[in-house]
Image 1 (cartoon, helix red, strand yellow):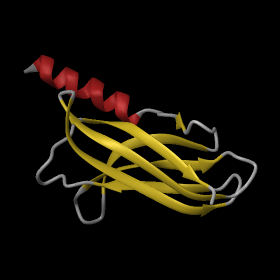
Image 2 (tube, helix red, strand yellow):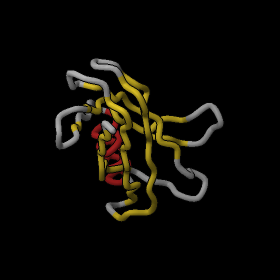
Image 3 (cartoon, helix red, strand yellow):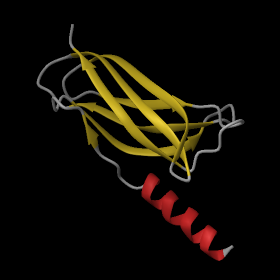
Image 4 (cartoon, helix red, strand yellow):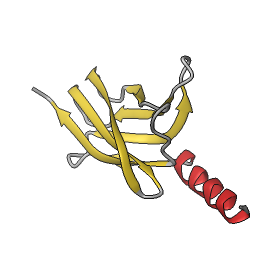
Length: 115
């Protein structure tokens, strides 16, 4: 029991600490990704996305795998449009936390479109 609680605490600390990710072009940076409870009581992944390019970004799509004990149990995504240079957005990727009980997540894709 103690080992399970310690493991869950360590996983939570790793998830809720500062997490940085960037797309392959270096135009968008993600930070502070963590699980949070939405106003409706369901869980979502929250964080901050920042346009770190020198120009506007048309569309950003961030995809996540939801994991339980390392196994993929679901997916979710967040999207933002029309970000000015240096502009941030509050990333929110809701998921079905009634059926799925992930203990961690992984960014699987960060796509930026400028067209």
